[in-house]
Image 1 (cartoon, helix red, strand yellow):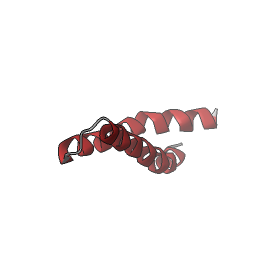
Image 2 (cartoon, rainbow, N blue to C red):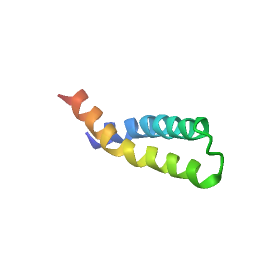
Image 3 (cartoon, helix red, strand yellow):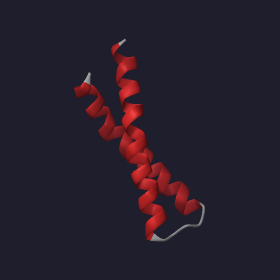
Amino acid sequence: MFRLASILYSLISTSLAGTGVIAVLAAGYGTLIPILAAAAAGFVLALPVSWYVARQIYS
């Protein structure tokens, strides 16, 4: 299951990070720190999401 979760993580993390960056830019924050924080939050949030999706696929 770890293998599937890691493959899913590569897809989910980029999607969540990109969504976060777009949301930050749409909110009017165009500096480096908010953009990096949104991208990092997307990558961190993708860990439990990819594990959950992999568990649902296996069961």
